[in-house]
Image (cartoon, rainbow, N blue to C red; front, side, top):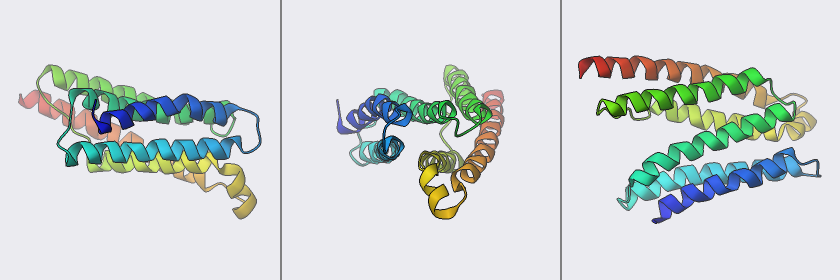
Length: 179
């Protein structure tokens, strides 16, 4: 197994650690959870870069990398809903879009078409990670600034989530009709 795939597996293994700290009632639990979440998110950028640089892109990596991303974001959303920091509709929209895109990619793959992630979809992921990280640190932002910038970042993430989901639907059906 190459280094990029090991980083992807590490990201998946970090999810239960993240959940323990995010949901445990302990001093600085959410701060540790935020650190684990950010570290896991950084492995996402690293594994892709390493796989491309070393020319070690594998089918396992193609499958596991997006799965690891979706699991990490879904875990953070579920933890934030459980903690009462966000409404469940945020989680439903973001996780629902991921199911939709995964299904569309499966349909396209059956037709021999690969639907690559757009730059806007990559930006969406970054905005989601920033928003979720900020929300995990919400109590610190509230103490320092008196408001929650994380919730505003999450609204922005939802806008990008909906738009890129729509974009995937349009692109997928356009490519399927052309083939």
